[in-house]
Image 1 (cartoon, rainbow, N blue to C red):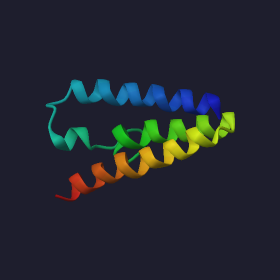
Image 2 (image 1 turned 45 degrees about the vertical axis):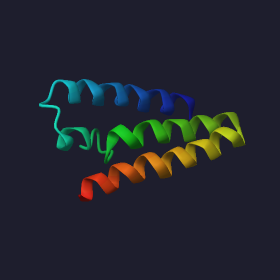
Image 3 (image 1 turned 135 degrees about the vertical axis):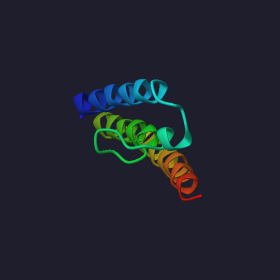
Length: 81
């Protein structure tokens, strides 16, 4: 799990490199990357949840869940507009 979280964060960094090399529009910011929809939101959330599960830390797991609902939810709402 720890290695998977590390790889997801590498993907997250690559997503930002892709974004900053683009025209920097909202379409680019909310794009998918490596098969992950709204990668700017989903990649770090999944990584946090995996690290919480790996460490068996309930506070991190709950915090990752709250982060996911808020962060991914806002991105999905913005895409629909």
